[in-house]
Image (cartoon, rainbow, N blue to C red; front, side):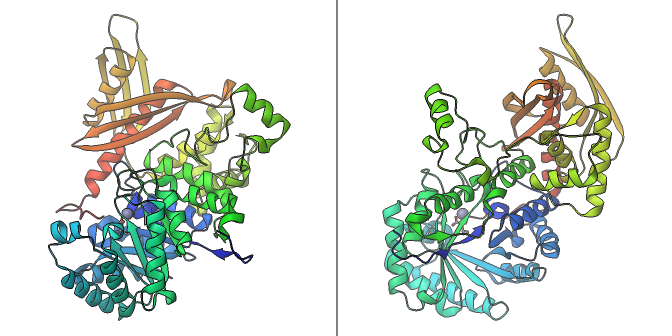
Length: 517
Ligand code: KIV
Ligand code: ZN
């Protein structure tokens, strides 16, 4: 593929906070989005899509918080082709130093007929009118032809031509339902860039979903066809099977640079911390064998592989773990560690705090050192989880006994207003009793879908990590908890889920959310 020696740059447009956040179990509060946006800026993404302001008050708040602090990357918001949406989005973008309006309209026959109930002429007219309307107020406009890969190619060319003539500066061609193949998408980009008037003056962008597991392969093929921006999300979160995983496409371009001939502006050593930060914030564990960021991605267990690795790393590794941010050594903090060491470790984990926030976390760190000899990364992350998740129920103490024929659990919680609530409940086993006591204390009744406990670390520093997912009023929520004691880790994971859905309930505006693509 690489025919010249000069490397060009592919822009990385991150939609973790929009397409990623709108997927089940991944919702974030505005302060959590701010934490993530800071980490994405440190990672070096070119653009961050912060949300869909017309759909929720929470997305408007997130844009205001992020705009006040994150100035380097372009900040984009999604908007339908509707005057009211555009007005709300432009207002939200006033907070941004480098604002981009991301307008979208469906173009495929299926969407035109069943979703929009519009014919081709009406679609073209709407694109023209709304891009022109927006262009009177903002210079940076991205237009997305939703379901582009299932649209008739000649009609798609007309839509793209109209959007460019009306003033769009980026053209995004989403594979909305993850249906296309690498050959098809490469040809689609090549054809449109070669034939549509004005195409050479705008940036073409790929936005691929992963329904057939092809999102990264299709995005690479789109680049071969001329796309110079790729949209994706950290850990590949997003609608249904997710979006193109940023960590994977970035490492594919880096490791196979001699083939593709493209760079990105990503600091690859920040990839794993950013992935882990997101996993903690949304409570969704990263699949162990996930490329690049899964905990098995650099693990070698079979004798033949270990033998090969000892002779030469290159036998079974195509990239160095340190290059994507896996730590060389586990740094251990304890009661002699100062504020600067804690701050450095938090930064390595993806948390960039201001002076006040650092002061609060350092106090909590010192309190933790009174109770335990060392404070690990997992401990720091659990402190940050408490800190960034906002208010909710906190575990003050718990006892679980399994002596007689029935197990019994007593939990003492502090509620969101700081009041103490204590409940004792019996159950069929310690975990059943514990979860029932937590349900009685919070008034939240959860139906458990899955519950897993595994150990993190070794020897005296080993921790139990519990993760669970639940169904609540038809929605799926996930949560994690870490502690030296697996039963306590389970209680923390349960509370993580309960707090998430309580916040979700409070945050949903009257009239509900507007569903996006
Ligand atoms: O998948 C999609 O089509 C989208 C657009 C709104 C960009 O997310
Ligand atoms: Zn999408």
